[in-house]
Length: 330
Image (cartoon, rainbow, N blue to C red; front, side, top):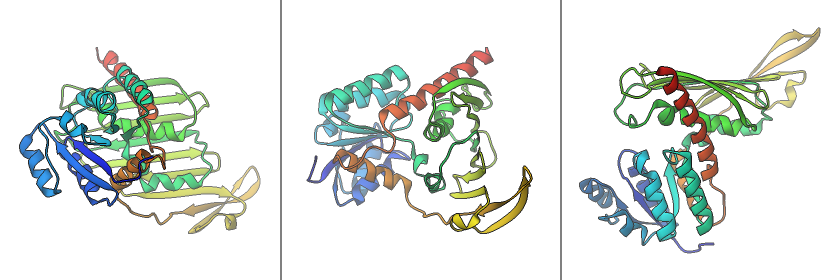
């Protein structure tokens, strides 16, 4: 267990990486040891902003760090993390997806285990308050519908939409449904880029749960919604607005906290009520919480919110979806 300040570095200080640097800089239990970027001018700028050093190579930065954030294009995740873990004994926080392939992910997981180092992966939606509120409920969903739509931007188009956007929702699904995937049916199209820009997948789990997921980066407005259906409960989750609404069929609404209203109805000749809740959700910086969790995990006080194995399993599903779409488009 580490007792002194954790020395952290950031590799890749672009749009997202700069925020990793900011959060390390703001923490009293962390020393931001430095930053690296292939754009040296950008690295110098962020280093000045957060009163730290910029480095000419990732290895020079790794040498003085306990933990590293890897916030680079997906194709470099594996090589950077492999060096950090094996050659410099660094814990790693990798922004999603963990790697390009499951073979790479498996190798990193093996290396981390051998070196007793942790892998945390930045599936940030796991921390969305609209989702975490559901931890208070006994969830056993039978059907889940997910929409994630976004206007087109150049950033993120180095990978297909399933690896850029849908992977968030696959990770959420795998955390909600405690069962292995039984079957996948998927389709998609290319609209703007040379890879898949719109995708839909229907996933059936071994326990009978069915999920329908649509992801698009060719939309007018942003949409990030989940609808969850199970026996006696229906919930709508707006990840963008961070709002959750819950409808529960009950005979005793007094046992449900913070019910805003009830509606009577009859089910199998029995009088019941639909109780409506819209919890007041705490707003917080989700990346800040991820960084806090990473540091606590390095110290041995917590476990990563999303570890390497969970991230690898989400990657496995999205690769299968993407391959199915590509095969269908031939």
